[in-house]
Image (cartoon, rainbow, N blue to C red; front, side, top):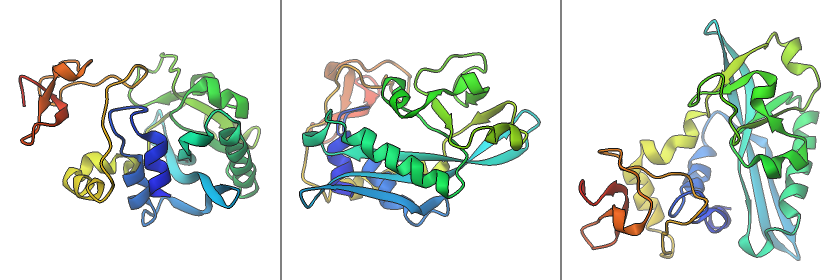
Length: 229
């Protein structure tokens, strides 16, 4: 699954990717839901994967309510844009509903997730932790799998923060680098459509390779600008 996830996410949201390390570490995380861990096969080959996680919503009074999220969801690049991702997601959501998953939110492209019944979370008064409460966040979709679940659980407005396990590559950079070194080398690239990059030291935007610093071996360091590294 980790090879598949690495191939699916490489250079999509950032130069390289970290999603395969999240998957590697998450299986021992108490938020991991093994009953909602699915693969998709085609002609005997595993071409897709998705996992689900427990999450929390923080109410305005500071109290917390349980919730759910999912991801990474991966489709091998050779099988993308053929409908497999939507098939996998719809199957997984249906299974999640049978297990009592009433509400789900996550970060992703609303143009894709709308096809699976999602809408912007702000329409349900669910805010994203890194944005102002009045913001319309286009990358933050949500869905009530069980209609009325939010109201039944006295959730009229809340803020979502992704589970800590999704940030494991930032929390364990040395472990991530050691893990990444076990894979065949692939070129990291800054491409259009990725999330904005900023220097971890001075905050300068990194929009092209020339803006970035260099590692001791001469390779590009996408975490720092040329002035800080």
